[in-house]
Length: 253
Image (cartoon, rainbow, N blue to C red; front, side):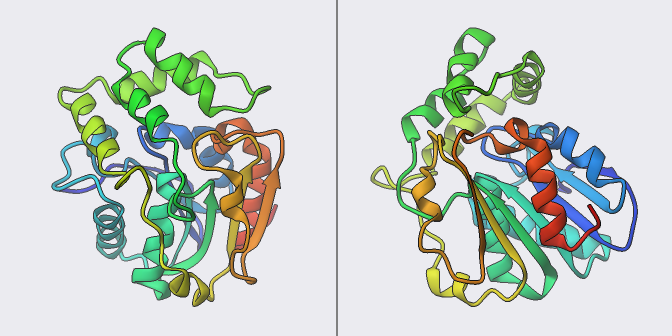
């Protein structure tokens, strides 16, 4: 089964946008539309999400990484700039480990896999939310204190989990995010070996994956900390994320 991707723009460089747990390609709408001014862009629904709900064995970062690499090969893409948020960040980093020659750059926004702590209780409630009354408090907890949660974000999130079986799939994926309350770690020695440009971005008010995960990273990584932003960086600070993505990928601003 093929993954769903919203395709936009054209150019010599290709950027793949990978959303976080429980999201969809819609999380990148504003960023993608502006990136498409100078590059070909692909905003994916990861396995088990949105229009990629029925992807076989969806759930783990490894399955997602392998499915994306296979999709790149099918499209004839030799090198791709990867942008991943949260779980999508873990997937992007894992792709860099599995096939570094295919990854032109990595922009990782509050990525999973960089430290053991994760707010699994919040993510479990988020996965189980079926209406606005249940979903909005979860989303409010994921955003920074001064960042509003728009009605559009709520509507997009509910729409992505409205298909039969979508809610059950999210709950199953949430259960697999941790073992004994901790998330799995990307191997540090493999991250140290990266030679492509890498930017890591974190919000100081992140209530899902703590900003201290950005400490002590390999010296080649460019680290950006936004003290007043929460976990939902693409939506809370799209202009700032756009600038970092372009600089990391070596695109004109």
